Length: 90
Image (cartoon, rainbow, N blue to C red; front, side):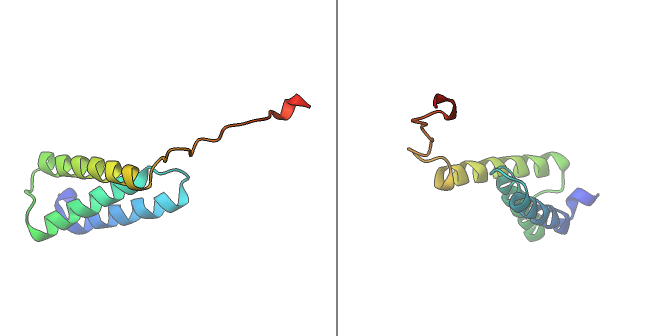
């Protein structure tokens, strides 16, 4: 099966990383890290060959990567813009 190949997961991670640069927002980088980590675990032989375990590792790794990235470079206090004047006030 194609999902058992480590290079498929690495290419998916690279494509998701490139899409993160193209698409506005901060969404796909966690998935890219999760796919890269899944590919690395398959390549080293630490991850079993079942679809359920592969998808579970991908999902957990993506969630953890997204939460860490959100904590490190996410929303900061005072980042919200407060408007003092409306354009229609004139």
